[in-house]
Amino acid sequence: SMSEDEIIELSPVVGKDLKILRKGIDLSFKNEKRIPNKPIKMIYAGGLYLNRWKTLAEITKIIQKININSVEIQLHIYSQDSLSEKQHDLLDDRVSCFFHGLVNKQELDSLYSNSDIALHCESFDLRQRMATRLSFSTKIVDGLASGCAIIAIAGEEQTGLKYLKSEDAAICISNIKNLEKVLLGILQNPTDILVWSEKARKCAIKNHNLSLIQKELFDDFCRLSEES
Image (cartoon, rainbow, N blue to C red):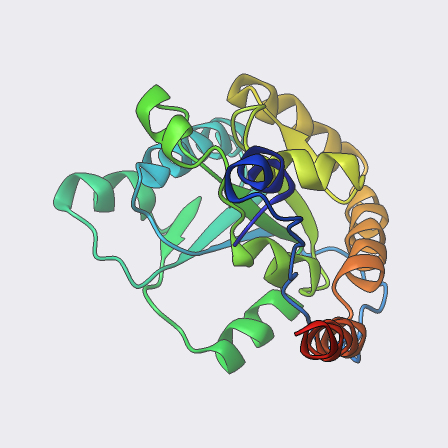
């Protein structure tokens, strides 16, 4: 998806004013306050390519450390990508992390509704950071619609992280070493999950209302038709 940073860089090149067409979501979703799960349930849904699996492996190590005496947090990964034997060992220990493969949208919506934290992450490898610097994953919008709190982990230059941070819609982490402190804080105050869930919902209502986006698109087409 096109991002604000891409518009800034591309507008002078194409010589036209560009506008973002945001992914819209059905805002009839329920985001009722609920007691967080015990253990806390984190969910990642998306690709493992571009070395995202490496970031997930680092996240898993931190969770395993936290769980050394008792299971406090679990990470559930849903992806169409297959795992190598090495990746399987790192991402599916069946205690702290679970790899479930691909699920359809209806199943994923149900999984989100029963989870506490939706995870967005990118690789920290320099080459991959540059490759994804301007990308805006549609999974971010899915997370905003999920009813979960969002934790976003990526380089500080990554557009998706910058968007969530500017909207105060997620717990944003640009240095993965800070994740342990964040998770320990959540364990001490689990109701923080509900606070961040509401922040995500407000961002969804503000920027991703499907009916408003469709109306703006229709109005733009009408204006362009009249101009031509």
